[in-house]
Image 1: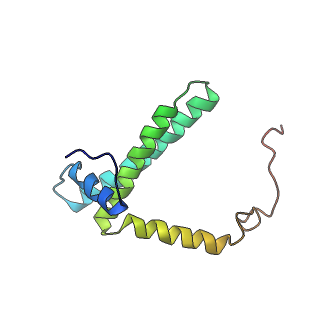
Image 2: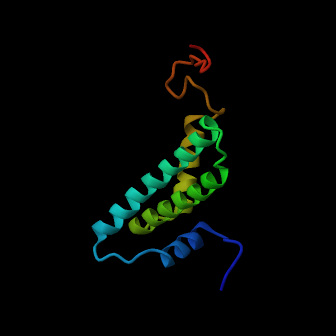
Image 3: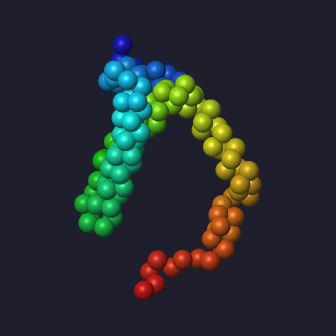
Length: 120
């Protein structure tokens, strides 16, 4: 029953559940998913650092670890009974409300001052 395309976030969440370890307690489950997402996000950051700071192309690793991070996000949503689609839509509404004309540093609380990363 291999399928190439996932047609919804709800379907993705169901597929993630099929590949998850079954834990004896709810605490062990949420601790695992919570620590897992942090670890995978750290792996994304590490691959980006190696790619751009060490000239060691880790783009394949970045992509793989983003997938793993999303898997943990789906499992956290499953744990709480949340629909990932709803969360994404709520996030877009929040961002559109905060930045109705697009992102600005001033709206983000940086006082509009630009940072020159090349400056010593």
